[in-house]
Image (tube, rainbow over all chains, first blue to last red; front, side):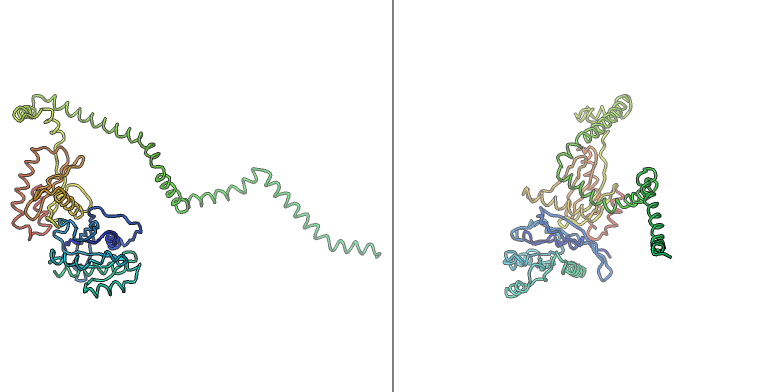
Length: 164
Length: 267
């Protein structure tokens, strides 16, 4: 059985949303930083362990200083949000609790995955400890550069979306 | 045997072979010198070797020199964009000019045919239409020549931008991505101008128009080529309203294939 799901990648400027998407779609990494303007949309067709297939329509949104400023119309009809922060820049995870609450309050039915990117640049131990102390629950850390955890993130999301 | 004879004998035994060898070497050197000095003989020897090397070189060009040449060309074009444009401009200009001349010639021929056909029923109808609608007969004539045609129809879920159904007369890139991007553009425009609950109704790009008709949970985007007139828009709107009557009550339960089939019957 084939299903179609809309997944939105959100996060502050330069956290690596487009790089994560590129790693997942084409298994590539490009060092150059080019800011996303508006939105870009990509599609990935995957086969789930159950044998069902899923078309993931992924909206990669431009970064804002806070995800709460994201254009609401881009989030309409979403099945999941991938909320990305950069473990090397504290400014991108200092207000993570507010941002997560924003999603839970305004989009309670949408599956949320919060992930820290750039695990190749810094040991995530301190960041994870900081978030744990603040009682912030995240999915984990990934690296768009090395590919660590990227496919697992999307596949886990797809498996969860299948059962919803 | 005297001392002198003995020495001679010894010299003969020791040197006779060397002399023969020296003679043979001399002969060989003379032959090589002759080959080197006479072009014909040298060519006879060297040409097959050069030909073989050339064959190998030519066969290796794509792998050994190809990437270097491609990269050099890319760099050259990148570094001298303006000069490339300068060089291409006259050629492009000529091509465009020739194309336009040809199109105008075709248009002129077709118009002449239509005008000459003064006493036909269609001509009479056109004249009447021009009289009653106030639109110039020449404009009506042009509209007839560039009649609008429907290239694609998309049924798209509002908000999510997920493609619910599609009918296409032409091959285009990924339709799911088109419906996503159309929705993103639509959302952007509707947000950007703060028009309340107003909806984007059309997008125009050169020879095409995308007519957008909004319904409660979905919208229909129709790609039209040719002259998009008000009368055609009116007809299209009626057609889409008729389509929505059969779609709307069951849109949430219909599969994509079922919606595609419904679209086939309408377009």
